[in-house]
Length: 149
Image (cartoon, rainbow, N blue to C red; front, side, top):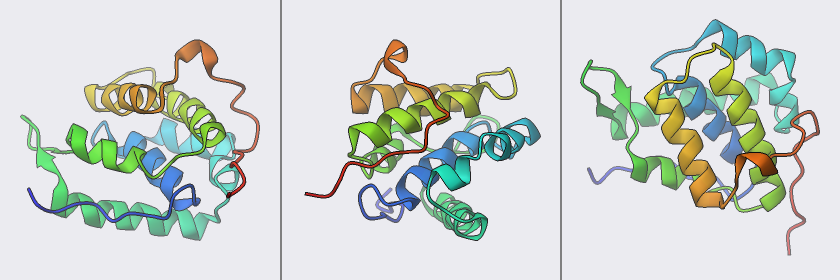
């Protein structure tokens, strides 16, 4: 393809926010149950963002999707594994990865359906970050970032 999604600085609030957006949109649309979950679980503040900053990341993600995404068999935009891996590579902190995986699991289960796109995002995150389901800690904690060294 040649085109890539924009990168954010490692472990900044935008990096995990974009992965959350990828999970929310992985089933080809904004689902009311997923958006309610984001609000109910205070995901945006837990990411360290204001609603306006999160909206900016959503818009940037959608702009990038128009450039880099593939069309699936139904004509919907979909991310390939390489692009998902690029998104995941912007999150290095093990604490942030663990918290983010918990959020992703909540998001993809919010509507009681697991789409192939959602499964891809979650399974790639687990593989890329070397995490297992039983290791996911409580999602109610604020996202913690490792101190910069």
